[in-house]
Amino acid sequence: MIRFDGAAKHHPDGTVAVAGLDLDVPAGRITVLVGPSGCGKTTILRMVNRMVEPTSGRVLLDGTDVTRLPAAGLRRGIGYVIQQAGLFPHRRVIDNIATVPYLLGWDRRKARARAAELLELVGLAPETAKRYPFQLSGGQQQRVGVARALAADPPVLLMDEPFSAVDPVVRAGLQEELLRLQGELNKTVLFVTHDIEEAVRLGDQVVVLREHGEIAQLADPHTLLTAPADESVAAFLGRDRGLRGLGLRSAAGVAVRPLADTSQHGDWELLLDADGRPAGWRATDGAAHPAPAFHPGGDTLRTALDAAVLSPAGLAVAVGPDGRAVGTADRAAVLAALADDHRPVSTRGR
Image 1 (cartoon, rainbow, N blue to C red):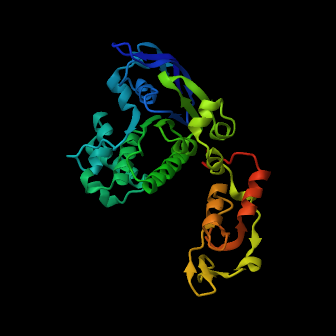
Image 2: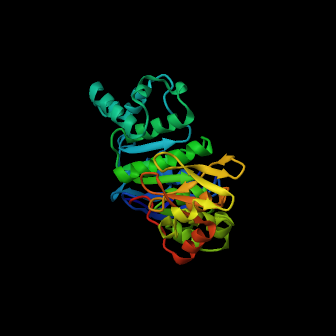
Image 3: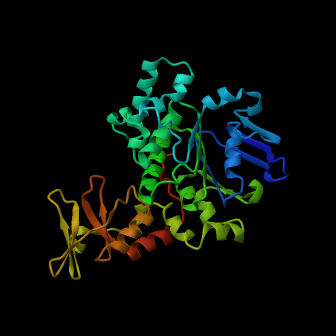
């Protein structure tokens, strides 16, 4: 566990970056720091690996004051992922990933074998190992950055806006990848972002910060969205926080009508492929349109509502784990499930 015990950072010119932070970061969970630019998020993060030295107070790692640990050894035992990945441009991917194992004295064969394992773990093809960073897309570079941070199997992972430099589609994929990895590895993750949607998607607990690192609210995502501490927190969360909350609730409670009753809906006919998977909606003029779908057992109410809104027939197609259509649900059914279920969904398997 990481503990901030009155940790503060005052610069020589009198600027106060962090006034004095008291915060526990629980082991095996993702804690997200979120807040406006200049509120001290990155300073707080870097106090953990001593890239920033606190001017007062303490930062404890498993009960030990980090200032009593050799800085180089401390950093080798903590994974660190930053924006733009920060890869060495002159090293191939496999050697970028093996950087910390090399520093720890691992032999070349063992370090490269570990790097190859991690390439697969973060979803990159084996041939990526031989490439240089400039030959990769932004999303691939970020995956390599995550793999490098995990190379020596550190218990703690610090992530400083790691996905902010990629496009929204790639960013969503990287977020999903992080949640998948965390489900397998259970690292203690301290994650910095300025994006509240990213914070509530990733965090087991979310820390909303004000100026000078003051905690405005610390809560799980569901509580944060449904019960903001004050008007300033509510304003930061935005007027659409209710929609974000849909992403934290399971679609399991959506009433799905049998396929036999709904494959014909007004001017629309649901088309299925040979395996029974939704292939599209066909209009009376013969034109085919996509058939957005959701999995009641695995998706959220937001996914279900998106599917219903985007469907030309006004119906989201419900599919089973094998992707086969089992029925449909309209917007009213999704909203009814929201009214009936006020519990947050445990979406991350943790």
